Image (cartoon, rainbow, N blue to C red; front, side, top):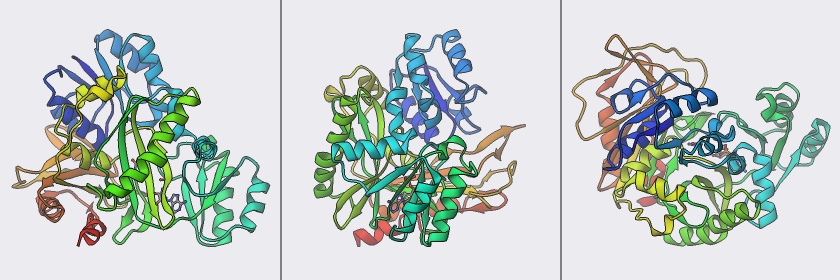
Amino acid sequence: MDILVIGGGGREHAIIKKLKQSPLCGKIYALPGNGGIAEDAVCVPIAATDIAGIKAFASENHVDFAAVIPDDPLAMGLTDELRAMGIPCFGPSKAAAIIESSKAFSKELMKRYGIPTAPFETFSDYDEAVKHLENHSLPVVIKADGLALGKGVIIANTLDEAKAAVKNMMLDGAFGHSGDRVVIEDFLVGPEISLLVFTDGKSAALMPASMDHKRIGDGDTGKNTGGMGAVAPNPYFTDEVRAETTENIIIPTLEAMKKEGRTFKGCLYFGLMLTKNGVKVIEYNCRFGDPETQAVLPLMESDLLETMLAVEEERLCKAEVRFSDKFSCCLVLASGGYPEKYEKGKEIIFDNFPGNIEVFHAGTRQENGKMLTNGGRVLGLNAVRDTLREAVAACYEAAEHVSFENKYMRNDIGKLALEAID
Ligand code: AMP
Ligand code: GLY
């Protein structure tokens, strides 16, 4: 089968490497891909949001299947358009992708169906939002309704900060129309769990839970990023937590979406927090997480393409979805300055790089036979080992063998998980 993979980050690289292991897999086209993906797929310079361009390419090249990975094309309805052309897809419809593209929708869904989440109110009126803040406990969490590149969540410690965030979103248009509506919610405390679930709308296959490291600085300090590293499995996701999550969150969410006429097919990402009052949903994403995917998929032992086909054909309950019980770490190497201003075009040198480490390219491009940096998050290094300590150590050891100007990484990926195990 010839496959189209939409996207061009580390997550897409991990997906493509796994798809390639399938005996069913023919040619893979990555739109747009990146410098490293070019080693594993045919990269075509069509943006993930260029719906017309993607459709034209898919039809000219007679692709058999498409995996739509990033949030934007999913929110824009690319899977609906491809399916209408007769191309089966992995990824939710536009109607189902709203679970990520509107936080107001997902919060109201949870309220309507009794799915545990932080108490909240939604506002389209600036003055009412400010009035609400004046009586709210601190810290308070303010979320832009729409997609905002992972930057639309502000945790305000003071009333002034909270008001500034609401003004920034609602009046100053910091996130365009994504900030026309805001969700104001209670601040919750507890370890976070990222859970990726394959679902065909009827049944669910859980991948090993993982732990992301969202802040730029060691000890979870500084600005939020797309994610600086991840480990799997997440030690907080015990059998007990898994049972509670399945019963109170996963099954009710799939049923709620079905009842709303928005059956979800694809990878549903549950951002969970283990509070002292039980597991709560912090957010849903309608797609694989990044960098969680780069930690989780290397543990997959069964065939990813088979699973994606089973999801699309709504026969997931009969499919074999199997993961190893080893431990996995993904360490992100970033450009200094990220998530704010950073430079691109720095040459990446691998020197004596260990053979038993997988490299997923995120922001890279090739030029004249050289690999250059081309984004904030540049590479993800992945190790799968018998223990988490070994997996983490192997990533840090390998990081010594990659260099580029202003290379930056966190030094404590996996630390919290290791402390939880010890
Ligand atoms: P989100 O984009 O909704 O995942 O939010 C980004 C990050 O903000 C989450 O991973 C949490 O660390 C944090 N966060 C979001 N909502 C809350 C909340 N209600 N209480 C505490 N932290 C939160
Ligand atoms: N790592 C968080 C996300 O993919 O949204």
